[in-house]
Length: 524
Image 1 (cartoon, rainbow, N blue to C red):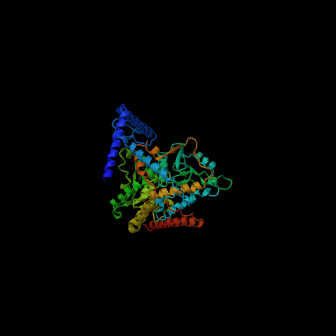
Image 2 (cartoon, rainbow, N blue to C red):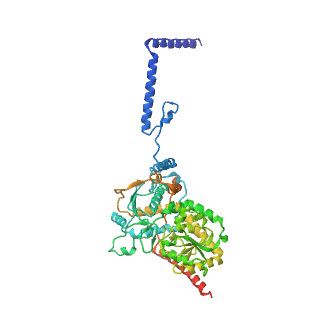
Image 3 (cartoon, rainbow, N blue to C red):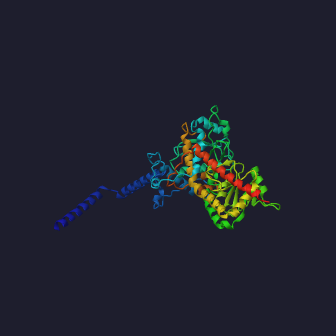
């Protein structure tokens, strides 16, 4: 104890001695301290400035140093919400790019833990098998750059290039409305849904309605392979490659919301009027001026002289736009037991909305097909209507339904279920994914970015948008990647299977036409 006290006294003495020595050798201690402090603070702020310039430091960390005020520049924009929204899009895009750096697994896909933790994906709906048929013309030859450039000369609206997970576009001509904009937006969302899983590719897209690649022009070995061109529909005489239409991400010009949101609204509309309480007539509302077949349909409307069991209405889109589309909300049109689908200038966007209503769809025999209708069967998902005698065919269909209520309701429900479950937005993305992958396998050249092409990203497309266009982009934007892999692609049809499928559809249609003929032959 005594020793410890002695040591303590000795230590204190040494400290005092050192202090006295320091005071003797330092003439101006205040000046030295001030210089050191100034040097330290100066170095601190110079470092902070450099870090801030490099984007590594936020100068607001020094909030307590009131002498320093940092004002960050905001993006130049004319929209009130857009700075925040653009930040969200950019953050999401960065996350997507980070996910694209995941290591590859043995099967060539990204080693995504979230995805691999789920059960094995289900088999894709049957209509995916038509992808093989749409690409069959190039199975033996592959697709050369010369073929692609020929597709451009076939009046393509734009070229899409996917390279290293980025999307580039080169536009050649203006499309109707903003079809091209929302088609490209949909492709961007596909890459956000399945980041890093799309191959490098180039494709040509025609955003008009009717197909242009006639199969008769490319028959026989003496003719060159057809140009590969993507569009929204095709027909039995054409070789255009069918792709989901723009309205799945919204049709702003006529206030049709993105598909996922529309489906929710239509399902709520279905609940408003129970099926048996619905109006017992066939309903149609649309623009008859786009095609002769629609003008012919109007002759089937109810009149003082005749009732064909229909209630048909002309939709004036100019007036609807002026009045805020109050009479054209899709969810308010599920009030009749039967709804008519009829083509316009080609296939019609209205198809999926009509079939989602739980009403039995009276499907006027079409010339064109989109990507999903080929998986549907008459009398199971819809009731076929003759195109060359619409009025009598519609009258019989409604009569049959009203005398076979349970069966009619079942057909309507099955058609609606098909649209709701097999054509939901997840399957739309899966269809796009498989189609583009199968297409890319056929390319005989290395995709590259052509002169004049520009990169597109969600922020590049979305930030300048206004009004409904911006709203629909926000509503349809994929905010996180899928947690499951795409559905498993089914095999192609064998020639025998394909013939059986087509014959089965034709036989069912003939059976219904026979019932119709019997109905009228027995009438007095």
